[in-house]
Length: 98
Image (cartoon, rainbow, N blue to C red; front, side):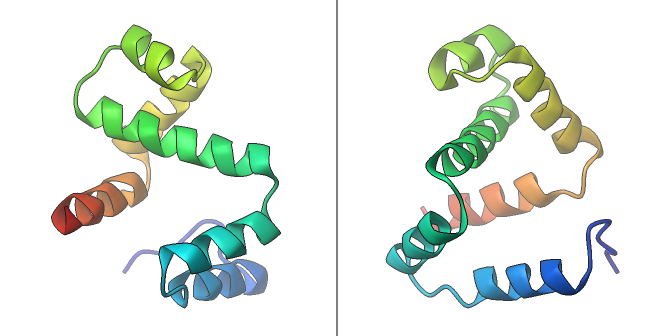
């Protein structure tokens, strides 16, 4: 079983909150209250970077398309290679819905 490195009472509550969201509108409302606009944009950018890395796009193309720095692209790539498979699991589920 997966044991998260960040798990505590507060992160449990956050994950429970995400899991009860029932619509895209609910998600937008929740995240606009929870995060700043730059935080949301940063998270969204990293998800797009992960998607493009999985498609084997170059760092240069990813930087041009997303505006992400090479440091951000490298961090996302490291997560894809050595992380908890979160990006892959989410992107696979999104792809299945399409």
